Length: 269
Image (cartoon, rainbow, N blue to C red; front, side):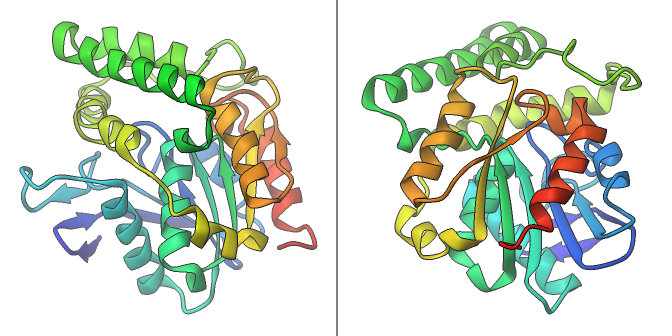
């Protein structure tokens, strides 16, 4: 457990080698990418954690607003506590957006960032940006009016997540009180924070040589896929394709970890 300003963060380490931080998407906690982390632990010391407010990570003042800048500073404190070297970072969805915000603020802490389908709506053309904003607001409004699982159903459509697009041995998580609490926290605090967030693209252009925007090869033209492709164009770097769709790291961990290993061991890394 690490004490950071306003919170205590639960984190887990596995494997040996240089540090690789995994920043989960959605309501994912330290265990959400366990299979992915296991596939990388022979080469890297894989760091996963519960974002503040999820699972075992607590918040000192629940009334304090949470932004993606808050989460990015949590990443800064985690890395500062665990390594003196620039780290490799993989983030998915909101995790990718947090990792990009962290890179813009603390570029010296990052050796290479693989940002998988960050919902960075500011890079979208105006019409797509307006449609994305409306879809995100609809998820939030559904949560307020109809509850967690109705909102989750709409969120899965926005993210284009197909639970059937998974490796044969992947077992879908069962509903639990902890999962419901995490979903409620995500929909109350983090989903609106994603919608409001705007990256410092100038700062990211300065660090573009350390960014690999990534997309799922099965994602199709969903909003996060489009953001990944257009972010690459904004930064003047190529994007990388990964197995599966928006949640490929969870649903296709073997193929995804193999591809992530390739990217992390490329000349750029």
